[in-house]
Image 1 (cartoon, one colour):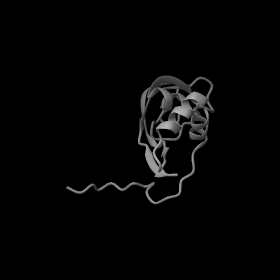
Image 2: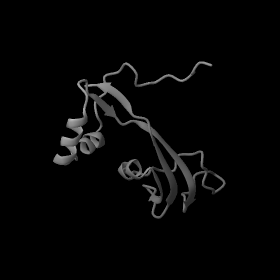
Image 3: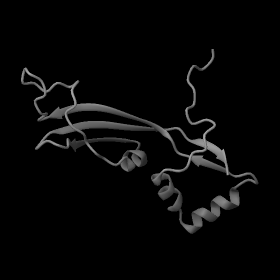
Length: 122
């Protein structure tokens, strides 16, 4: 059976994200020396990519968006800005996030990171 999915990153010259640069640059000297000693002649660079799954557990105090006076989940209600560093480092996070543009609306989200490293020759 053939795989119907294609790798969107294959064949592209991808640069590292800001997080990848920070994580790569955070090695201490001892760790870097150990990596260099065990490296083979042809080094490979690991690019951390992955899939972020977002599940809405609950939403509170959402703004009224439709003519019936209800919060319609299919209409745009606002946005929530968050950093993904915590979920990438921990793998799973369940937390409440404020909804911008409202006085008290919050979203309780479950975030799960599934890394899919890509190896390329350096």
